[in-house]
Image 1 (spheres, one colour):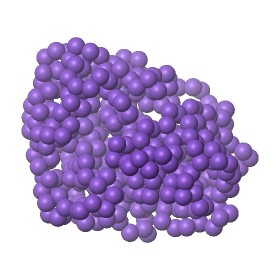
Image 2: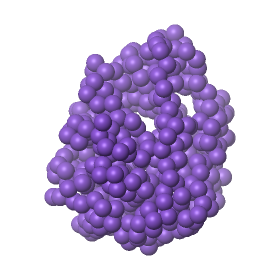
Image 3: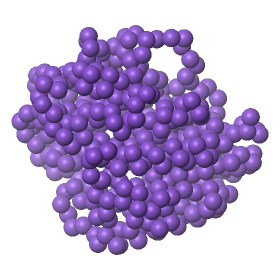
Image 4: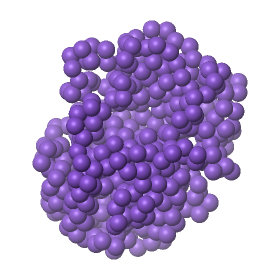
Length: 437
């Protein structure tokens, strides 16, 4: 069988830092490689400043930055032996795609990008100019691309990544592949980019191995894909092509010039077999916070999930009581193969210092839609499976917020609700480099 490799990148530069070695190996073997960019990266690192109500740049200037990053990606692709026909730019909203995932489906209005101030893809060279910033548009685009290219291996951002666009791309890709399960069955290799104090040490260390974060070492069957010394040099040249990003994060980007690349995903959790429990190290306070804000920062220490009758129960242990300006958000998104995902409930449970609210996208649901129990450091949310659309699977996570600023987060996990059958081999023990055709 001939391999076909698809790289799904949240922003221009992610394709190189996470998969530059894999791309080179595949091309040397003559294996087709396509790269899909979720966003043009036009919001970039200004997102935190926007949240904090600092001045916003002129939308036209922001879109020009998107074109700059598009051109940088094309140059990096050339260095990796790809050309323009191997690249697809979707143009969904940088730093807005997780909002699209959570709240902008069907009858809900499209998301409005914070800096470009548009509600649809504004780039003429995009895959589908004018595509609305809505969940079904993203999902349909990904499915069209998957069916047209028919990959055997898909590399995509990781469900433990701290960047919202990276999380959103993983989630949309997961659902797209579930929807196409009768037509495609590629191997999936998530890659990590943004994680606290990682990679370590920072900076260019070509003779060192890239090791997983300690907190994720045992929970994921990591695949280490070797990168030769020659490929490292080419990968570094491709990273250098992303000049706009090197201006402020050179040491970080060059941290991925290592002897290997890392890939791995969590196994699904079948709640019909046993409840799920995991510990988590709370996120350290971002340097942009004031001392007063750091003092009230709340992180997650433990999460559990279990079935209780006809409901699912999520319990969170937090590092300290929620202050008035802090809140936690629990996400529960159900999936059924026999129902369009856009029509399934998108449940978010907001637990704040002053009360609780349950949402289905932007719609506020009655208080009876969820049972919420709280102590000073424990939050338990119970939601009927009927409220979630009687799902076969649930995608779940949680985040803490200070006002609108996202802080600590838990990995997105897949909870299975079907009766257990034969156990498939869900791990990848070999390197994900494309097989010889």
